[in-house]
Image (cartoon, rainbow, N blue to C red; front, side):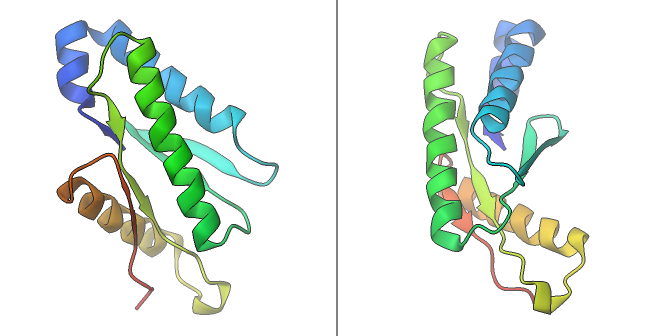
Length: 127
């Protein structure tokens, strides 16, 4: 989820916001592996399925995306656009439905935002 997107979009206009979203989308697409899946969920929220990644790999990817958002913000002439990430690991043995996996990632995302934004947070294990 992009941090401070709405104020920037409101201040600089929708063309600026659209460009920022496109740059983040490009970053997701261009730096994903075969088998990964990137998607825009809506607004300024994205999802990334890292096929076969372990928790350390997911954290490394999250940190790279957070750094990319900071770089993109600077390239666009701003310094307040950032990225917060919620990470939920899928365990096939849990048979967790996708909507619950996404809800766990979303809860972790909001913890990242509460903890100060511009960071990644790991979700709790499935119940």
